[in-house]
Length: 130
Image 1 (cartoon, rainbow, N blue to C red):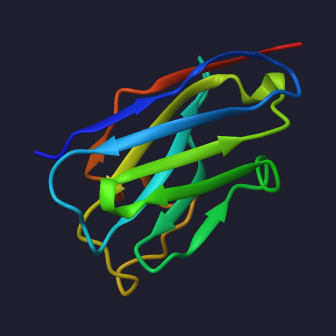
Image 2: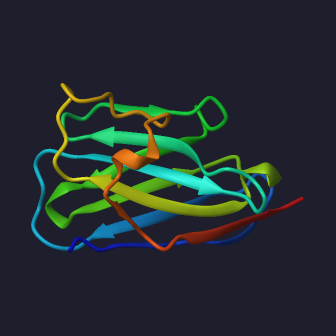
């Protein structure tokens, strides 16, 4: 079983920055689609960013220009740098992965069907105050 563990959440004021970390257990995978998702209480979980093993990265319109995905492949670690945070960014943030990905199956984007993700972390809470 693959385990994903998120960390780095916390409370910051509007306009501040925060960086989330996602560590995936096991070997270093070479064919994957990984994404960051978030969910506010009472709302559906939504994708905010995604990256595949070819280096393709994309973001949802709501975070584009403010959030950036980066990674340390050797350490099986994914990051989400969040800048210019807004109160509406308050949510539980999740890291998820498909470790047998091929672009012939689907496009690795924030809008990917969440059923495509085989593994999920337990989340890291981000709270932005005004």
